[in-house]
Length: 275
Length: 297
Picture 1 (cartoon, helix red, strand yellow):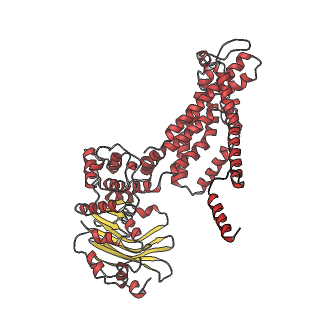
Picture 2 (cartoon, rainbow over the protein chains, first blue to last red):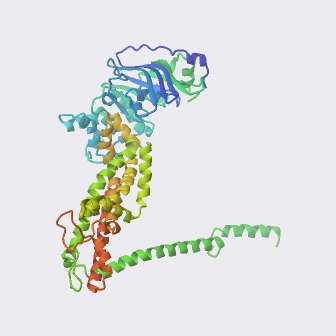
Picture 3 (tube, helix red, strand yellow):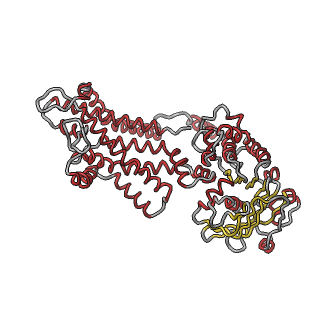
């Protein structure tokens, strides 16, 4: 599948972002135990844009995304080498508390995962966690409105979050994530468990969210990346050294990556020659 | 018959074979086995229902306010009741629950979440499983050595501790199971919101697993309420209402044991009534367990 191993091994085409970079991920190596999962990838995340991560399965796009708020720390054998700069601080620095990092960099997961509590409590969870003093109800309403869920749930805020449909649950999770106004929202294949209509709604929502938040989106759906992402990072799998190591092949404006890819591997992938 | 006719009959018989054939071998076998399972099911419930029937008939006759409140009668005395034994049982089960439930849930948190695959965890999980099958009298022996000898007297404390030892493995194992049922993605969500590990446990895992944990607690309490062996030489018995925890204490199960062996009709009737009350107490806890166990949606 690796048509041109030499090109693949070389450094990927450098992408110089135009706007302000909120998070600059300069990762050197990610290990799971002895297994080198991802290597040398520079992924700058621009403020107020949607950065899409695409690539074949096993290319490490989710791993990279989850490194951005240290979610991978929960896996014992995970090891990160490199730097992720957020507001001038390396979030992998010695003095950094990963718990605090996650409060600024929110996450929406592949499977909708509301808590087994009321819709209101789900959205208020992060606010209460941060000891928010103020009008909780107003904040919850605002978050639900921004997540385009308010009209559907305003009369049943006391119902369990688990009683909603899959698409509604995912929007509830987005509301929960944005209620605390995080700077960056990481979305790990948020639509893969949803039907096309719900997917459409979430995509429209993402486009609205980028007005206020910076979004990094992992998707296995190239059409989705084309529809919503401003910038696209394409990850490939390098099998030349025996293992399956993911790396950044190419990053650029979404239209550039899809219409005029610089790398042969990218061209093959976006043309649907492998997945 | 011509060849054509033969094929016609063959086709016909194949068509008719779609009909149900009651006397065909397979159908007979199936009917026979179905009947057997019915018989087995009925046989298995005979002891259960006859016990309940006997309890209602024999015990129901003496179940009145006097039986529920009065003190146990002496030898040839008429009337009387077992109020002190009901209170004693509830007090000792209470002591057992207060000691074993927090301890058991904390242990379950360790086993289910904090370090499920450590050596200590697998060892204590194994021991807990062994202890669930432990003869209950051994819990009494333990409490006798650990509490009765130390305090120098039989007491409600000793009875309660014996019951706690008996309850603990059930609480630990069912609570661990319940906490493990909390989906990983909910924990991920909590971590993703910026929860520390203790916040994840306190705010998400425990509330979500609570119905299952309570079911285990209630079942353990119900089991402990009916135990007699652990109380024989820890709480002993008393003919009076409990006035302090450090004195011999009456319990329903020991009262049943004592009275059912007596040659007096009055006492034997009271033993039946006490059995009925004990079964009702156990039933109440089982119903509570079912109510709590309903997953909330």
